[in-house]
Length: 234
Image (cartoon, rainbow, N blue to C red; front, side):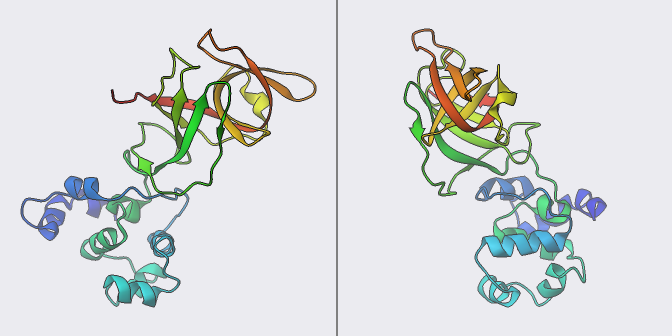
């Protein structure tokens, strides 16, 4: 299947029509959350169908105009050819290469979880609406998340409006002492701080890079290490 994909650029361009290319097709798609641990094409099709809200294969087939072979493709009894795979990618607004191989390529799948406060008072954690996804930096893990900086306390390292990428949060923030992290405090606020130390009572000293902001002390429920920053566009 992977060889088929690698050798099929001309065929894909033909299917998409004159003046189109696979890369242009992919760039038009809405960013969706991609699950990295699905092993088969059928599992990935099932995931996409449920993500779109269809409880049954028949409901998806009727609503999206999928061919009768879709049943066999989702249950794993047969493998879709390139033409059907491209149709599924278009109907589900999903990357063709992910459907066929399960690989998450650069540019897909990092959800923005809201703002993170760079100041004395943390940003209150609101329910995630799942509405925004941004291009992933090279080499970042599939379960990374992103936050936008609000405030000046972490300058000159992080600036207001920067987009921070964090790895999966850890429930024991003491493992992140000495690192910059998104800190989930006991009062359900979210800070971007350097975790400087923790005392025997489990209270953390959180420091700012900007020397005009004093350190604060908070209990933490969890923390996520910062691994990448994308500068705000001025």
